[in-house]
Length: 301
Image (cartoon, rainbow, N blue to C red; front, side):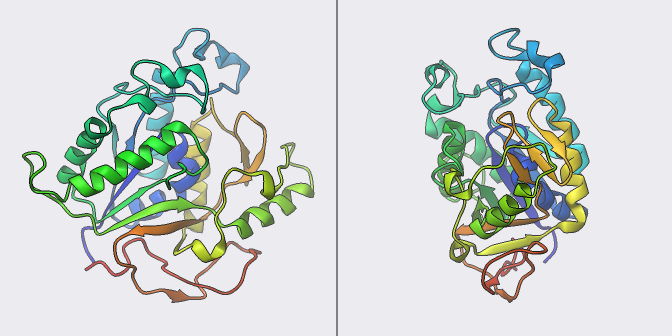
């Protein structure tokens, strides 16, 4: 298949690198057109380095513009040249974690009119004409309100973009829509490795994590291990949000995670392509043998 076009919808700067960075770098290197849409500037994020603490929302409230620069650097590391903010930079503000006062702030993405936000994404879809769309599941992967809203907006736009009665641009049907995922077998392996010590990060039990999918749910496994270096470089670019101690990283909570070179997805819309017996898993991974797609574009002609 030629002229492959991949569109990813993420909530904040850094989400793209953590969850899909290796995938993005692989497809960009292979010549696919990779478009990243970020829904907010991440203004409510917790700042890790003390020297940048003044940027936080409760002080200078200057984190959003700073993270625009971090995201630009991350995209360069991943080889991604097409990045947009949904509705333009700052159109919707980071809502903060679920249940905090900033959820109700005027302009928060959690409060966005669904059709308005989806309409902005439809315009991008009809311009770029991607065959594949990647976003989060209905829980926003781990329950953050902006991630949940990104899921809702992406799904609404996925349907509206194909409706010739909506808007003035030519309708476009996306062939496949995927949700990001991490198998629990991979999380268990990571937990065991972290418990061996030496990383300086906190170890959290898989049973306490707000994310993780059963291995049976995973439909697609992208082996992008040759691009994990680009992913780590992109994560380092998000210095206000991520501490990297290769191959591990942590957010402001200090809980260690692995920067995965094999990234996983669940096909949620469209027809699956052919599965590949024994598709590669992370070295030392757990779980039973499986049949999964090994290409987001599998079955698209």
